[in-house]
Length: 363
Image (cartoon, rainbow, N blue to C red):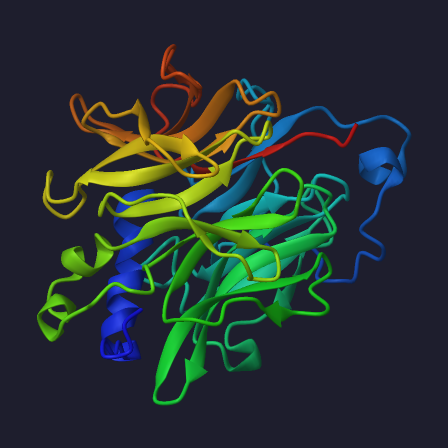
């Protein structure tokens, strides 16, 4: 970012926190140490069988607060795996190799049910919801906010975003750590904003959202959050933060990039019509070649379509979606990679399923 554009926490915080809140959403288990999170061949409870592919997601489903749920990929056998009315539980991410799920919690009394990064604490549990405990409380290491953890494909590392004090302001940076959160290292050096990190299929690179380093942000821009957000583009870098490469160049606000398992493409959501409808906007799923190039539309149907997660064969995307006419609240859907065969996965009548993550047992 142009060094003449000084974005303080006062300005940056509201701009960033609105990035996710308008697009992605509109009794505790025993907190004892569960011991080694590795399980025999990925089996739950230490058995020899492999668990079936499944999804984790956040939902109320008649309750008063968001909990983490687990279901088969066709949404059969949906079962809550957390149960604590004191918190909203959201953003589940399952290790591909270990019996371990990370997720965030915020006080259920908060105005924001999800994507409340300033109050978020990071928790871990086993896939069946047992041995849940807080592992990174809000404010750890002086961070002003935290969120969007994601596992590397081999399950050995995680990447996450944290808002850290720098001089007289606080900026969002990316951090890589071992899967147990040890050896935490900041990998971004320029500033002041990095968001929504995830991994390449070989684990050598990360993909994320940032503002181009040469983008000039004027004082007038700071008074118009939509203007600043339009500068959000997709980038990749090596997992140590070097060799940054820009992927998109279209001045459309982008979020939540995920690399296809076959390595060919990166899918993300874009605010294609940010003011229609007012306060929410219209969000499309789009994709671009992983090395950069022409962006294609996967789904732009006048609704909100966000946080696309690839199936292991790279043929389909699961995502969460809000339909305006006729109104269908947040639900999980899937679509073919080429944009055909859109299917609602959440049963009709349920309107609060969101933030899906797909779990496949390691081969």
